[in-house]
Structure formats: C-alpha cells, structure tokens
Amino acid sequence: MNTLAVQLNEKMQKENPAIFNMLSDLGKDLYYPKGILSQSAEAGKKAHRFNATIGIAIENGEPMHFRHIQNKVDYNPSDIYPYAPPQGKEALRSAWKEKLLIDNPSLQGKNFGLPIVTNALTHGLSIVADLFVNPGDVLITPDHYWGNYNTVFQVRRGGRVETFPLFNGDGGFDVEGFRTTLLKQTGKAIVVLNFPNNPTGFTPSIQEGEAIVEALKEAADGGLNLIVLLDDAYFGLFYEDSIKESLFALLAGAHSNILPIKIDGATKENYVWGLRVGFITYAAGPDVLDALEQKTKGIIRGTISSGSHISQTMILESLQSDEFPKEKQEKFNIMQGRAIKTKEVLANEKFDAYWTYYPFNSGYFMCLKLHNLDAETLRLHLLDQYGVGVIASNKTDIRVAFSCVEEEDIEELFNLIYKGCQDLTK
Image (cartoon, rainbow, N blue to C red; front, side, top):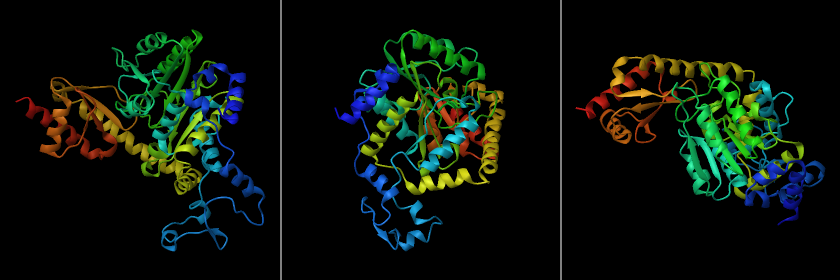
C-alpha cells in the first residue's frame, strides 16, 4: 500500500475507527498522488517568471484557444480552457457550501466538509460505491428506487440490494419497515435515501424524517456501521407538506457510527442537466474529512481527472447572480403548478377502474399502480397508438414525468393513458 494511503488511513483510524472500517478495500488503498497536479498548484502560486508545469498551451499570456469557439462564449479564457482542479473550482465549492447552509438551517454549527465537485450525481454515487462497497456488502433502499443503483452498486462493485417498503398502509413512509430491515444487518450497511423519490415523487414529513434518523441511530447504537447516502437529486422541489431540509442536516454529527454523505447538484435543481455539475459532501470530524477528500480526489484523478471547467464557471456565475433566487422561484412555481394540476386531474373517479397512484408531493415524477394491466404492454400501446411516452418501472407501475408536460396538457395526457387502458381491456 502506498505510504500516502497508509497515512490517510492512520488519520481516520485515530479519529474515528468506525468510519475507517466502513471503507472498501479499494477505499483503503486510495490516496491523492503528489504528482503533476500538486506540483503545478504550487507553481501556480510561486512561479512568477515561467510556469512550465502542466500540459496546456499558453499564447499571449492566456490559455491558447480557437477564436471561433471563444467568439461564442462570454467568459474569460482562463475560466474555460485550463483544467479545473480535480476537486472543482474552489469558489464554486464555497458557494455551494453557502447554499447548503441557507437551504438546510440545521447544518449551522455542524462539522461537514467543503463540497467536492463531481461530473453530476451518478459520478458522485459511483465515487461512494468505490470508496465503501465491497462484494457482498448490503445496500438498503426503498422498494421504489432508481434502476441505475443496480449498475452503480451491484454490477460495478458487487453489492447486494435489500429493499424495504417505501409506503406504509396509510400512505406515509414505512418507518417500521425501514427500522426492521436496518436491525437485521450486522457489521456494515450502506443506506440510500432519495427524496424527492425517483420514481414516485414522495418526500417524508418532518416527523417521519426525524423517525428515520432515530431508526438509524438505534441501529448504530447496536454496533452497525452505517454509510447513509442522501441522493438529493431533486432537492428543493417540495410542493406540499414534507420535510424541507435534507436528512443530511439531521444526520450530521448524529452518531460516531454514522457517516452521512450528501450527493446533489445543479443538474436537476437548477435545470442544467447537460452541464453535468454535481457535488459530494461528507459530514465527519476534521481528520476524517481531510482523508475522505484526498481519497475522493484520488478517485477523480484516476477516472475522469477533473470535471468541465466551463460548466463550473457557468454554475458559479449563476449562483452569484442577483437573478438566481427570482428565476429559481419562477421555475419552482411552474413545477408546483404541474404537480397540483396532476392531482386535480387524478381526482376524477373514472380513473379508479384502471389505477391508483402512489403518494407524491415533490420532485419531477409520480407513479400509477395499474390494477389488471401489464405496465410494459400499456407503455408500448400508448407509444404506438397515441404517441405518448411513459416509463414502465416494473410489471405494475407506470412513471409519469409531469415535469416535462405543460400544465394545460396534463389532463389530455392522463385521458390518453386512460384510453390506452380501455383499449387493452376490451
């Protein structure tokens, strides 16, 4: 094992041996090399005459570039063309941390790290999988979950997904089902909680959120080491009664056997999906935070090297813009209007013959639970006969993204789904 990895591991063991023991074999081996990038960073501060350290080209005192590209953008070449640091632009990291504190008041006074920039959220999930998942490790998640978790945690890292019911009989979060699943585990478990949930669009209430935290603390008290991954892809899109903070804020510092990790980003929160800017944030003691950052930088350096510089520049400028809060509220109002309209339409009793729907109060999506129809059969029929695209999540469930349907078109959408159901039951 590299001596740098050994030093990081020793720091973690000294401050919190439980978190060190959560690391995968790969996680224990990881470190950030003191190579070209670290030497170049030093040169960037001190090489006032010539800086001949990093593999870019300089012309007339600025990064070399094509005029036909520069003419299309309104940013300084130094904010576009050079490599961004593996951990991301420092100003962007600081701006996102400020945003976290504004959005999550319970984080005030708690110890959590500077967010690390990822190539959007899937990259962040992949980093967590590399750091913490060994073959056979258990991943606990609700029975309604994003299918890409299978690839990230099972296919790539050999983890084993174990689910619990998302909903109880009253349509709320199944705290008891979650607790029972947790207390069956021994050694270590990775918990993935995604709110607003994809595919259902559900977020727990404040009371349910507090109960989730208590269940995790109970399991940790019993000796279970818990990596709790908060997939906050749709954070902030809370339309009705629900918890408005990330569970990351409630879990930070909650227990020495719990490592909360927040995965979020501008992609869906700020409607910039193609810019691919996400963040990974850890909550732990200072030595563990430093070690995890170095190991995370090591993964990034060894995979994508660094994220898009121009994307980070654009997100930073957006966050600093006076227009940001105003425009964000405008888009929230549109999304909330679509969610409310969806519920108004679904209140029509005629739909009861073919489906019920899972509780939803947030996010981009909602799900229909079909009574006597195969979801894939209906999906194909709607596509072929009516030009309507929906997602078949499993044999009974259809996911509808109201996020991409204008409010005035939502009634027509569900009427066409209804007509498709009628066709298949004649």
